[in-house]
Structures are given as C-alpha cells and as structure tokens.
Image (cartoon, rainbow, N blue to C red; front, side, top):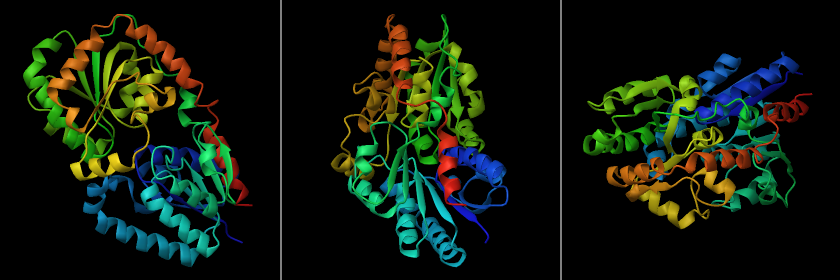
Length: 367
C-alpha cells in the first residue's frame, strides 16, 4: 500500500521547519511521497509542492481578507487532494487560520492528524485547544507549559521542544565592543510595509545620532529584498540576507525586531532588543478583544516580564522608537542582564532534538 504525507505550513519559519522534518523522514522512509502546502524549502527537501502558501503568508484579519481569493483556491485544491488521495497522515505546522480547517476535514475523512507548533491558545482562542484535543491524533507543542491547554480529548500531547533549542550554544553571543544596530522588519510583506515608514522617519529625524553605528536591515527572504531596497530611502542602511544574521550577532549592540520567532533568536544571542508590531487598526482592535497574554514578544512571554520593551501599534513611531533606543543604548548593565536572560530562555527550549521527535511521531503513521 502506498504511503503518503500531506504537510501544511504557511510562513517562512514553518517552511524551514518542514524541510528539516522532510529530510529526516526521507532518511527513514525514502519511498514515502511527501506533498506540501508550503514553500521553496519544502520543495528543496523533496516534497511535491501542491500550493506555494509561503509567498502568500499574512498576519491579521484585514490582511487575510485581502488574500481571501488565494486561500479559497488553496482550500479547494487541498480538500480535493485529501478526499481523493487519502494521505496516510496530515502534518500541520502552525498556521492555525488555515490548518484548523484541514484538521476538521481530516477528522471527518478518517485521516490521522499530527499538529506540530499548535496555536498559541494560552494567548487567545482557548477553544482551539479543546478543538484540537478532540480532532487531532497527536499534538506536539514547543514549550513545556503548553501541554495543559490541549488535554481532555482523544489526542496524545507531547512536548518536543523548540527548534531553536538546537542552536543554543551555537548562536554567536554579543561581543565586548559592538557597533551594529539590527533592524528586523519581519518575514511577511505587510509587516515590512508597516516597519519601513517608521525606520525612514527615525533616520530622517534622528539619523545624526546614530553616526557611530553601523545600521543593518535584514531581509527575511530574497523575495523581500527589493521591497527593502526601495523602502529604506536615501539613508546609509546596509541590507543583508537572513543567512547572514547570526554572523552579525557578535557585533550587534541593539536590535529592533518585529514580533515573531526572530525575537527568540536575538534574545538567545544575549542582545538587547525592542519588540515592535503594527498592523491594521481593524486587526489591532479585534486582537485587543481576544488576546489574553500580557505581552506579544516571545522572550517576554517566556520569562513573564518585559525584558524587551514593546512598541505596539500607535506607540511604534519614530519618536518613541528613538527614545527607547537611546535609553537601552545608555544602559551599561543591560548586556550582562541580557546574557542571563538568554540562559533562562534556553531552559524552556529543550535539548535540540525537536525535529527528530516530530519525525519519529509522523513515521509511526507511515508504517
């Protein structure tokens, strides 16, 4: 009997994680066909790309609504594939806005579901935890304290650790005399478009105060680089690719990071940072009604207090960003505290065998 896996992710991080899992599965079961709703990394790892979902990744209600026609088409193709091909298992990675719908269909069709990096139900939408507990077969969560939100149903629940656990000890640490300020605008187009006007305003109004620093803007993917080139304005900001991020850490004095996984990477490097986030006002106001966590930055959430100042929505302005940057740059004790926070965060990420554990679980459904 032919065995197959449908993998579904929706952004650059999920696609990168998917690629590592695919490579491990192909070592174990090279005959298994892997079909993906993903991106270029999944394809390079050996998956047949059913739909490129990564290039259309969005965040926020209004942004999703603008991409609605694409996701409707993706749903038609994915649901038709599931009903016709009946894959041995669905591996869903993050992207709950789309993946939860796939989970429901798989439950109806009798297709097993493994959900890796499940929704952050501790922040909002706890009903999603109850839903997954009923409809999924195995839930693999990232942080040790998340499991309790997925109990009470038929799903097995396992802590597999966070993929960044494998990088603790390998991520370069901030050096003694750093002179680089990193700007990390995010991996989604709409995040970048919200970030760049604030960066231009910062440099236009206060650029003279940063002459002693090297300013670097990081492109999360090659697709975003032209957007950064056009949007940085006439300012001396160097643009580098995502693969060059870690080598910069030793010389980085401060980072301005869009909320997301990259905030954890920066924190593990012992680098002080400011976490920023801006979306449409419709999305923001809806989020305020639903979001239950006290912070949006993962380092702050993991440690339970604001180690990285957060500038959200109306507070993410050139003037507020400048004041916050000046305060952090003047704090001589901050680097030592940031190194201690890095060690505390690493304890919640596991031993680095995340992808091996996910591959082991998925392989059981491919026997």
